[in-house]
Amino acid sequence: MDERKDLIALSHALRRLHQSLVGVARREYEAEWGEVDPGQLLQLLTKHPGFEWLRELSGLMTYIDELTDQESIGAEEAQAAHGAARKLLLPGSDTAQPGPFTLRYRDILQAEPLVVMEHAAVRKLLDRS
Image (cartoon, rainbow, N blue to C red):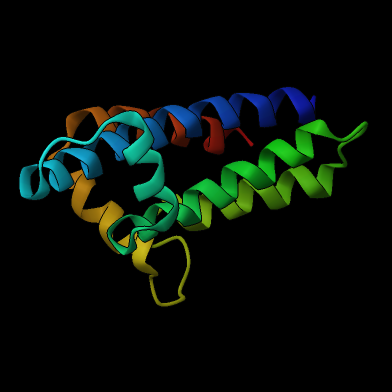
């Protein structure tokens, strides 16, 4: 198994999912507060409480990117990254109380077909690992 290749594929799939989720959050924000430009969106993503739920996914992507930047990736590290993604993205795969990301994500999965498609792509990668 090529851990780096698998994690890079997961990273790309998570980025597409994140982009779709940002689009949903942006539309919701703009419906209430008006249009934002890309610079304002970046500020909202990093500082606004209404976008805080997305930061857990951002953190996971950063963690995976840091792993892929290492010279070598151990099987245990790769499994830990996949496990963290499963815990965050697959509701019901963990008995812990769901956090803000999971609660919001569940709602979005019920309403946004593009997010469902990106979720399916991530799930396919996670099911293979």
